[in-house]
Amino acid sequence: MFKILLYLSLLLGVVHQCRSQCNPSATTVSGTHAPTGQICSGDLIFEDNFDELDMQKWQHESTLAGGGNWEFEWYTNSRENSYTEDGFLNIKPTLVSDETGEDFLSSGVLNIDGGSPAEECTNPQFYGCERTGTPENYLNPIKSARLRTVYSFAFKYGKVEVRAKLPAGDWLWPAIWMMPRYNQYAGWPRSGEIDIMESRGNSELYDGAGNNIGNKLVGSTLHWGPSETLNMFMNTHAEASNPDGYNSDFHNYQVMWTESDITFLVDDVALATYAPPDGGFWEWGNFDSSGFPNPWRTSNSKMAPFDQEFYIILNLAVGGMAYFPDGMTNPGGKPWSNTSPTAIADFWKGKDQWLPTWQLGTDTPIFKIDYVRVWAR
Image 1 (cartoon, rainbow, N blue to C red):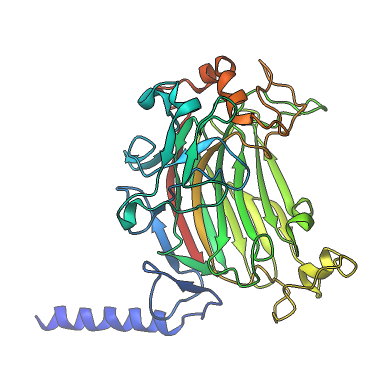
Image 2 (image 1 turned 180 degrees about the horizontal axis):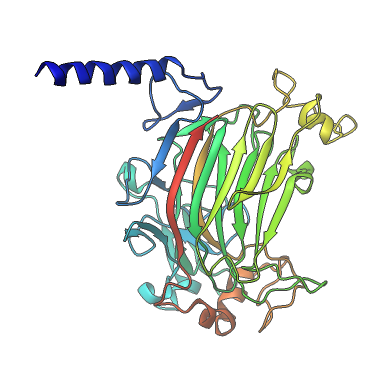
């Protein structure tokens, strides 16, 4: 017994000594699943391996709003569209018409604001809680899912790694990204947006130069600016390509975020590092002559707006009026234009072009996430 007690005492002493050598972290955290106590540099501060769908970690959005881009999906909390299986989170698109019949899209009424807190519509913008279908303005024809840690976990500075396999299917839009928890500098894009990974599900979507901009390409982007009309995201946009397609296997999508810069990586290979000058993103954007006030003038950090806590979002969008450019080459064409007042109806009426590429009933159109991990800076 004495030897056991001595061993335990020595072990606890080693643990205490290691902890006493903790390098204090610049990372801050908040939320119901944020760690408490001292945070040391390199600590794992958030992890989900998706052995189950933890509703306390992930809030499902419920909205028809279309993500601010008039996208064509209806985000729901349904185990048809988001579920865990074999240690993976699956985000899967389904057809509304399979539940309601096709006529419902052009004549039905959707009011998705439920009677309990878990069933409330989460975004009323852009007719996000109630819509009526007409022959010109169809209801959102696709159901999908968007999950976020807005209440459970937000952080400032650290490393995020998400291991995921992307879906394939025309006009699918998987994304891993982060948004500010408190909008310290007012509405988008003044408080920033960090897009860790975005991609298009098309296998054969080409730009005018013959480059594949579908599932063989992923992008990472920072959004920032003093107004919606002055979003300087193209200054902070990086891409990676894979001739096999990012839908063919799992890859690690990463961001390293410090007090001085942000680096995007795929499979530990850096795509780009963005370090603003001493005058911060205001100087970088050359906004002095913009006519807008500097929303970050009260911050002592050149990283503003990226000096506040952000939360994590995982989603699978469909179509919309922004991310899929007009004029690109795709087998069967693009059934809607980004200026069409009947874009959703046009998209649905063109389903003979895109629906076969989804291969519904297989894993092809499913966005699979193996894990999400965040380490302290």
